[in-house]
Length: 119
Image 1 (tube, rainbow, N blue to C red):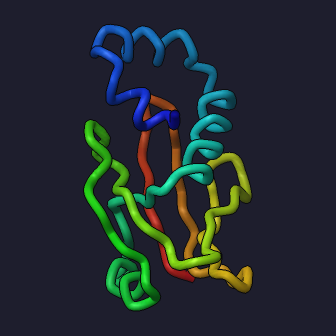
Image 2 (cartoon, one colour; image 1 turned 45 degrees about the horizontal axis):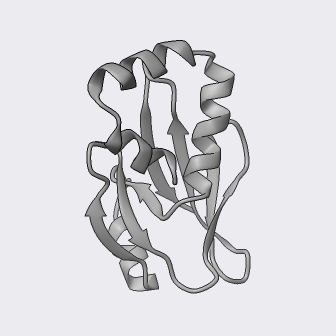
């Protein structure tokens, strides 16, 4: 079960306590990047015409992740994947390993944000 689905199932009090118990930024960012690269989501916030370009490449944009204002479910073209490159950065690459976009994700609860930019 991924983090997004687990958060859906947790009540508000449990979520708040989990956030404050695990508030070490490094641990939170590390976990955030593992979750981002290991699931079928992309950020809702995309710069320029990234959404349209990705659709033209064959990315299927599905519903928003319930209870999460930053991410949406997607179906990537065959062979495409997200690769973690840094504590808060990942690359979206095609089946040949060509970088298509960069994804920023800050998972700390006090500054949580995500976005995608084409490369």
